[in-house]
Length: 448
Image 1: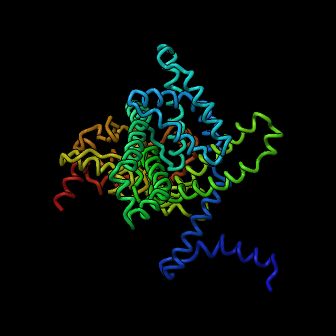
Image 2 (image 1 turned 60 degrees about the vertical axis):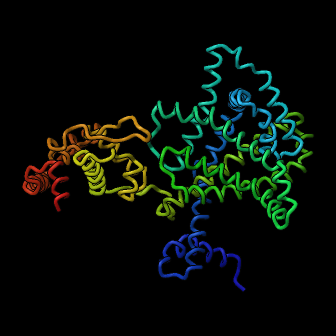
Image 3 (image 1 turned 120 degrees about the horizontal axis):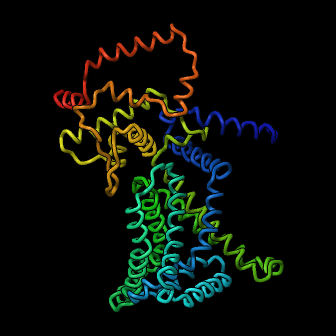
């Protein structure tokens, strides 16, 4: 029988060597699926142990505590105008169900604060601060999801205003209206008549038990697709939602058992025990939501599932190629009157992760070759006429150093033999391009 030390050494060798060297294309289907699942769990464990998911989940707990009452107050006011405000209490009970009786007490306390808050008498300044507190929560959530998706770009002010307003004002109305319509339909005479007929009654009974889980998956899918400032494909968001929803259900049952046996904490912390338990549940909930977002990211970008968590650096040549390809796509649309380019469209056409596209676009904007125009999503246009942009001029702009690199170049002691190599390369490039402009490149490719 192998010793524990030998088993540990063998397991370590598998996780850090054999697992990543195996060519999955040469493996059987079951082994391929198993290896991919182990790789995913390995990377998720590393992210939880060394990444910022834990810290960001804790940060969201703090922001949620500050913004919970204002958020409910604004939502309650909007829901009350549409006559569906009475359904907010059952939803809150479901969210804190794992806390048991303590959860019900928390809901009554929070709703008491909401009832005591009169939005109509706050005044312009008070109402502005109330809305700002709610928006800060949504903005914090967006920043966290952008970190998970490695999205460097940010929504414009106009997009933030419209998107956040829809979340705060329209979202709760649609959700509660749908829930109310469903409940009314299930209590109708037609539904009761169908329930009396077998096997429809059994099927609807089973469906009623599955619906809460499906609603959680639907809510998670919506969050994963809407919140990050990048394009998230539906299959990827759905995979992350299934994982996140499953973890939510399991953790809810585990936490309910934990809360039921936590009488000793009440003896230690007295009245603060409820708040502590609520904060723990908030942390677990946010962490599960972020883990599901991380799974969705890896599902959309499987190339990021790798042994090392260091960001893969791009070579100077590939950065130039990517920037030129993006510039070519934008110029092609300009010459042939095509639809304007966006990060999503460029991602689909070039099959490159969105964060890499955003980095290249930032470089092109910094070199004053393209500009971002307001749109939904933002679009990118050429600043100059493509006929006036020479290819040599474009390459010089892309290779132009920033301030820090310029200082290093001035300090570098260049030797004549090395300097002559770069001079000859520049001369060869001039001869090869032969005065070609960006428009010439687009028109020539179109003719071919």
